Image (cartoon, rainbow, N blue to C red; front, side):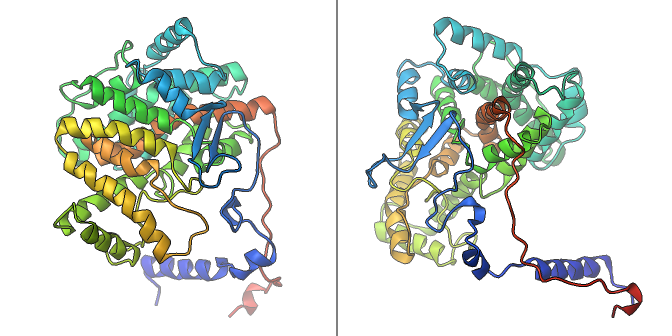
Amino acid sequence: MKKSESEWIDQLSAMATASSQVDSSLYAKYDVKRGLRDINGKGVLAGLTQIGDVQAHPEGDATGPGHLIYRGMDIEDLVAGFLPEGRPGFEETCSLLLSGELPNRAELADFRERLGAYRLLPDDFVHDSLLKLSSRDMMNAMAQSILALYVFDARADDTSLPNVMRQCLRLIATFPLLAVYSFHAYSYRYAGKSLVIHGPKPELSTAENFLHMLRHDSRYTPLEAQLLDLALVLHAEHGGGNNSSFTTHVVTSSLTDTYSAIAAAMGSLKGPRHGGANAKVVAMFEELKREVKDWGNDRQVEDYLARLLKKEAFDRAGLIYGIGHAVYSTSDPRTIILREQIEKLAAEKGVAEEMDLYRRVERLAPELIGHERKMYKGVSANVDFYSGFLYRLLDIPAELFTPIFAMARIAGWSAHRLEELANGGKIIRPAYKSVAPRRVYVPLAARA
């Protein structure tokens, strides 16, 4: 009897799984750095970059704080430059990452003006690409639109640096539109919501434009725009070794077009191991708030966190989302910066008690993880721990959490693409050792 389609696919999947699994002991035997990381979690050196750096702690001080560096500049110094002045910093950060230098006042004004002028999509693009082909997933919708923009670019395959710079600037400018309009299309088609489309305003910052286009009434407070802008700055770059930036290098090294390279990076960022963690943090806290009766009781909070680690709560994955990072151990500098600023918004929104709960989990979770599991390094809260909370305070729907990450990281991806092309390197092609047994061909008539 002929198998049904599902039975046939299940059988093929089982065969594929059985023939694909590699004996884990072979990784040690052949000294394979799986995931390009050694047994101590240190990344294999695969390239050199001048764009960004991620440091677990200062050299020679294993207990010191972590550092994030943009073009040789500590992120703390960059934030301390624009935040006290009450001006947006994302455009300044984009200019720094792309050019390698901080713009002066006139250069920054010119950069912002030109970026504002680029916030345009081709005629009928919103209807034909975003609304007509709406998706339940915003990252897929954006990737589809990025590839569609290739069609409208007469020099789409030109990989000269000036042309790629032009393409990258246009993508940086239009990413907020792609994110917001993709969400509106989703809300209209799948959630039955009213469709309201606001055009961008060239005089507004990236963060201001996002809030203006997202909200039906276009209203936002200066603090809301300031904190979203700060989140964009903190997410704009994270070294060449993170999965999506490395993807940009790998795909760019084949000399493909900009739209294909950035769409590939989007596919990487979409994965829950990379860009989707902040939504998991928010969902985890929603359950925590229901399960824990007294949010101010350390014991009750610890009991819930212990259940998470024992796979008895939330998604049964055994993880406390937002705690731990591949590089940072003592502290994630982005977390420290974001936490201090979010406290102001939490007070403004009247949710100081919930902010205290986040602080409590941030304090208790590392100790619990260290006690329950043997860790090769310390753990601390990462930027995802607070970014989802910030977006929720801004009334941003969870469907847009990862697209906001993409809105920021397109700056870093663009810089890495330009860097890969500027260095004219070979195609990136790491080696994989085959451990499959040798076989002989069996004629079709002789097969069982």
